Length: 495
Image: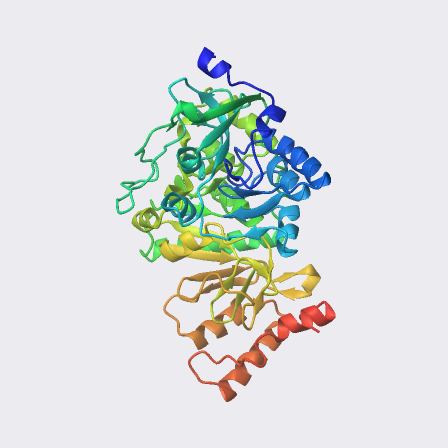
């Protein structure tokens, strides 16, 4: 290591001591990939100790999206996370938000970096980033994510680097760092286009600490896709084949898929289908399921904001990065580019995201339980739903053994309006809502997507509205949340 950098090497405990009460910390990390792992843990210990002595200590935490327990979890449990943005999925963070201990700003993932650079959201005072290389002239090579990390590095007053050798040099060259001008264009015309640099250039004088690590991202494997996930995947792929046969869907458009079993089931089915042409991904999160497509020789390119591999997946990638050329199949971008509306629209992305609940008129709730309790956040689903060529919202029709219906009369919180949703899919079937007025949407959603045990109740609600309400969107406000009221009162939407 260059002497100028070696002089800044210290322990995680020493680095954490450089962070003061009230700091705004921007960390690397996107959906469990590339987040700092040792400095946040020491910061949590320090903050907890100071609070035990009666001293005030708290920080604001900015990320790219969800991150691991070694950062999100430890800071939440220590009680020092006072504000969080733009997305989270950790149980302890979620509980802290819903108790009112942590203030949470749930944001479209494509919006957050620009709002920070413009100063509408306070800029970070400290950036803590997971990197695989740093040079004396200030070139920082990131690990498994682009996220919001470039913006945090450029706007923070001080930088702490966790220099992580876990991936070796297998991710160097994978990044394409491009920060758009306020009114500029993003000249990506194919999922594999590169328009930036593979590093972030910063003023090396801002580096105040380097902490050496060799730690993986602690991502656990998803359960194997269940029958419902496989059924949803089958409906989607059958529909895509139908659209291509009709000449309404080009064969070369890229795909975006959210996180979870259903998304993995779709990609796994693509890999197994002998008729499936090679595919490109222009997405946020690249998961282990991409290996199935790679091994079937059906992956053109995978562009995303992170490589969120399980522990086994990380080892698999490293083993094949050079020997099988996998390194050349991936591009990692900042999330304001991976989720950029201009690019999504231009490329004609096919988008697949998960709904927490949907209502019979086509609105989707991605974030809140019973209208008030945050689950995770909107993430990038809105970025893609509004701008994609073809958008699917997927959900099993029931949850909790049938006590909860994912199809309700009116969603308890609206993240995606009827104007942004196209196709609903459950294990019961697929409803293509394009070109349908509200009443026709309602009838189709009830018929195709609702669970049979809830169809009579949903039809009863619609019939009542048709008799007693205006006949554009026949909602009856006095009955619209009966499903949710029964759930809170009896533990079941069925009553």
